[in-house]
Length: 278
Image (cartoon, rainbow, N blue to C red; front, side, top):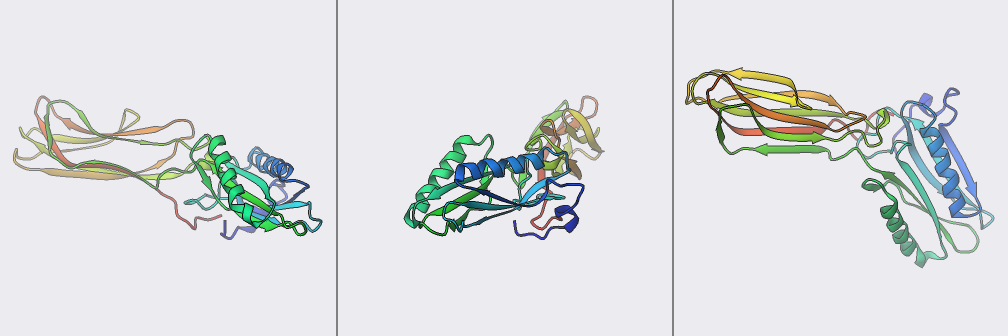
């Protein structure tokens, strides 16, 4: 959460629920409720791409006041674990009576997050401040209920297989849907594939990529029975908001001839980067 923010995405009269929000409460539980309500309001306001991009705490001068500063923005992309979309962002606050209790309270907070998460939880930014008078500390955690997914999804089969006398799926790969089913959490994936084919009867060997059982790309090679021909390509896939996407790499024969394959790979790489625009 240390990236610069485009001013019009931080402060804009047309999007009043984003911006810097200072929240105060007498106890951590109330602070949790008030902060989460502000985040949820931004997520549900209908703005495109509302993100929690800043999370800070301030000690209470009166000794019993808890303050948090939330920076909510419109953001063009969450990159690789840089700031969570408001729809996934969660906050939690608790008090430690003294410094030796901080680690214990943090462990209790981590356990509570693990119990309450729907997806794999990610901790974004722990914050700890003194409350100012009685020696206690306010502890805050920002966490995300889910994340974009693994950076690279990969499957491969390099050993020779076949011969096949009918179209045969050699590799399959599933790209996840967006984490919360909205465009705010969609990402782009660079899908690449390839394999080497051998037509043992010299009538033509094909390589085909299916997306959700529908042919997306294919190519055919014809050569002598002893020749191995290679084919490869790439496709930019926008993550689906509603469902998983399955890619199948298929070897295809023509007619009744037999074909063999080797060196097959199917890969999807998350097209994000740490300093994506905000």
